Image (tube, rainbow, N blue to C red):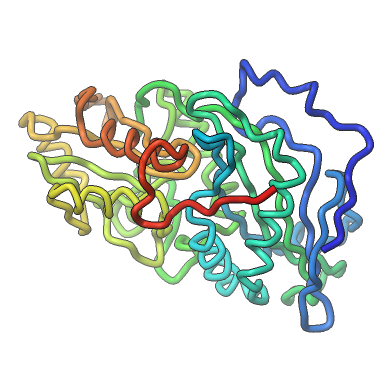
Amino acid sequence: MKIIRTTQSRLSEVDFANLGFGSGLSDHAFYAEFANGSWDEGRVEPYGPLKQGLALHALHYGQAVFEGQKAYRQADGGIAVFRPRENAKRLNRSGSRMMIPELPEDLFINGLDALIAVDHEWVPRGANESLYLRPFLFGSSEFITARPSEDYTFGIVTSPSGELYTKPVRVKVERQFTRATSGGVGYAKAAGNYGGAFLATREAVKQGYQQVLWTDHHNHEYFEEAGTMNVAFVVNGTLVTPSLSDRILAGITRDSILTLCREWGIKVEERAISVAEIVDAAKAGELNEAFGMGTAAVVSPIEAFGMDEVLHHVPVPADGIAARVRQALSDIRYGRAEDRHGWMHHVAR
């Protein structure tokens, strides 16, 4: 693999004592190109502008998908990535839906390894900090005919990041806008899914919330996701989360949390969850917790949800399931606990 190192690092410009989330990009990026029916071996080079012009296919037809994952500084000083092969598989599931050629899994992993090895000093050392990884695929031909691209680019950029949410959030039950419909691309990490959510989120923020709770497209009767995350509720000690469908992203953090909870003997139900059920549970004092689950925030406790101008408060227990799984995942990811599931991929450098 070709590696071209920058001659002028920007590392000294980063304030590692005050990291935001995803606001600054590291020195290098990984690129691989698909042309004439195959992928090349890829390369690491200094981060810079794309070579394509305004007829870039992805800009006109949205043939673009991405992933989100993190690399963690280990207790022994090493670096490890959380479940990267699951991200590679999901990127290809998303790509298949958008008619993007399959990316070899080893190219994905080798690209991550090479990029992180070159930019290893960008991996933060602080508590609850990580190097956020953004792999993505997009149509990179230049034409404006409405058909799939002929050429594709796989890229990875990285960003040293702190916590996305530092305290529990208030969310709005969204019953006007729709995130995804049956038969659509809701289960894929397609770029347009997220751009299409911005308006609803902005309106919720105007009303004093930090995010939205998405409901189904039929009658807005059932919960589906929380902002850009999966969602879970704890009702009378049982963790309930919406069943996966072609409208709901199969979260890797979600899968990890459900695995841990089942191992701990916590009752877990994956099923349809109506808005009415959760409202009734909140009124009856039977809603113990609610939280989002995702790569960026890991676990984001929900302290209240609003609907019909009524705010329903939710307990955020310090010793609850959300706090427990957050700590357990953190210990595994930072190398403080045994990785019994083989979730951590260690990067050599």
